[in-house]
Structure formats: structure tokens, C-alpha cells
Length: 194
Image (tube, rainbow, N blue to C red; front, side, top):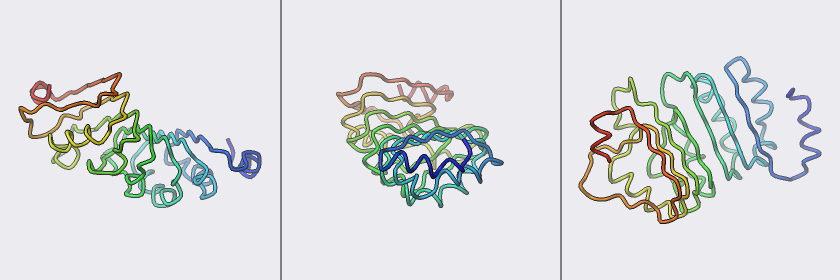
């Protein structure tokens, strides 16, 4: 939708929460930047970004993250990215988020976003071709702590999230968990994790 409709949409929405969904490549960034202006970001509760190329996020995040304070749902997928982009600190600290879906993104495993408010978590890591996967994949202890912190989790989907340094200890999944999906292309390490 052309950005020229933005004033009309903001006027009609008043202060009601907004849902923003965008699928963009690098040529479309000026239009996306127009839509993700501070007034829109502040009203946005649900953000779904499908981006082609990680450089777009590197350009976009510094502009929008300070204004995305009221999110309850965040979905970011990086298609054709050469590297996992780290989720900015401003988003990592958003403990009010209830639904989180990240594909092709890195996130510090101790982030506040992994809180007791989270009910749905979908993580798909891009680990092939990565020299040091310790920077991307959680350790067993980190993953164990995630599960302790996310006490309200109902849906958990993991793609190539195989904790490093496996242990004989059992990871207790939240009692509220209704659905678990696990997919991995790791081979031997996957069976160790199971």
C-alpha cells in the first residue's frame, strides 16, 4: 500500500493497536521506512517482517527499534541472508511479548524476551556454513534456563536449535506446553540432544 495513505490510516485508527505485515527486499526499503515511522511503530502491537537479505534489517533496525515499545507479537524471517542478524537489544528486552517467531536471526539466550509472558516461540536458526556456532546455538545450561523462564509457553517450535555441551540432565519443559515441534539437520548431535 502506498505510504501516502499513512495519514488517513493513522487518523482512522486513532490510538487503536496496529498489526503491520511486510514482505520486502532492498529496493522497497524507502517505502517500508515510511510505514515504520515513529507514530506507527508506537501503535504497533503485532509486527511481521519477511525480508530478503539481512542488510535490509541492519539498515532498518536502528531507526525503528526505539519506537517498538508496545509489541506483543514479533515475527521476523530473513530469506536469502548470508548471516544471522542479531536481534537488537531494544527488542531483546521486550518482556511483554507473548508470541515470538525468528528465522535467520541471532538472539542472546539470556534476553528478557524469553519471559514468563511468552506463550508461543518459534526459532529457526541458520547454522550451516557458520564457522563458530557457539555464537548462535545455546548451551545446554542456557536452554535449560530458557525453559525455566518461559512458564506460560504453550507452543514451542525449534529449527536447528540443538544445545551445545549436552548433559545427562533432563530439560524440564514448561507444564503449560501443548505442542512441541523439533527439526534439525545436525545428524549425530541431534540424537545426543534427544
